[in-house]
Length: 428
Image (cartoon, rainbow, N blue to C red):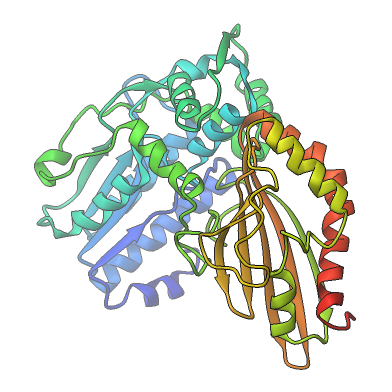
C-alpha cells in the first residue's frame, strides 16, 4: 500500500474495497500506516470505488486512549477525507486464533496456574468472536450506502481480562486459575512479563499492554438497526469455537481432511498463533516403493511392535493402565490392515490413504493431544518418508510432560523411522 501506482491499479474495477490492516505499530510504523491510508484514499477516489470498509479498534476518546488506538482512529479520519464513502467498523477484543489479545489470554491461562495480575487485567471490554466480525464485514456491503459511517462492534457482555482468562481456563479444561492482585507497575514491566511468559515478541507486547488500558465498550449500539439479524456469540461460545479446531481436530487450511487432522494456523500466520504445539519431525530417503513403505508403517503395533525400544513402549503402556488408560491391551483388529476409526493399542486411526499416509491419534492418558504421522513423498526414483510426532499441551502439565519425554523421543523416534524404511527396502 506504499506504492501509489500499484494501489491505483489494484482499485480499478472495484465497487467495495476492504482495509483490514491492523498492525501493532506506533512510531515510524504508524507513519507508514498514515501514508498507506492516504494512498488508499486517493486510489479509491481515482478508481471511483463505491465504498471503503475499514476495520478499526473500539475505544472511547472521552477519557483518553492509547497511542495505538489513536493511530487506528486517525487512519479512519484520513480515509474519510476522500471522495469515497467509508464504513469504519470499530471492534473490541476479537476472540479467535491469530488475534493478539486472544493469543495472550490463551498462553497466560495455559501456562500459569497461579497468576500475578497487573492493573490492566481489570480493564472492561466487550469481546467478540472473529466469526461475528467476518459476518458483519461481509453483510455490511448489502446495506444501502449512506455516506461515511462509524459502527461500534462488541459482544453481548462486558468482561475484564481477568474474567476472560478464568473463562478460557474453564473452557480449555484447565484447573481453576488463582489470581493474585499485584501493586501497580509500569507498562514496560508488564510488557516484559507477558513477553517472558508467552511466545509473543516484546515488540508486540509493548504496544499491546499500552492498548489494554482502553475501555473498549460500545457506546452507540447501531449494528442492530443496520443488520437486524445480527446476534453475536457470548464470550464462552467464542472461546469454545476458537478451541474447537484443537479439541475436535477440525482444520480448514492446508490439511486435506477437515475432521481428523490436528488444528493448524494458516501458513502465513505468525508462529505464536494457534496455541502451542511441539513436534518431532524426521525424514529418510529410500529406494523402497511407496507400497512397501506403506505396508511397513501400517503394520505398527500389535505383535509387530514399534520397530524400536519395544521395552519402552511396554513400560509406557503399563503406566497408561495404572492411571486408567487402555495401555497396549487393545492390540489391533488385523495384523496387516487398518481402517479409519479403528483402535490400535493406545492409538486411534484418524486418517489413512493407501500408499501415502497414516495419522494416529493417541488415546493414552496425557495432559494434551498427541499424534503420530507418516507421509510418503514420491521423488521419481526414490521416496521420502516423513515421520512427525505432534503434541498439543494442556496447561503447564502438558509442557512439563513434553520436556520430560523429549530425551526418550530421541531414543525412540529416530531408530523407529529408519527401521521402517529399512524394513521396506534399502535406505539411502
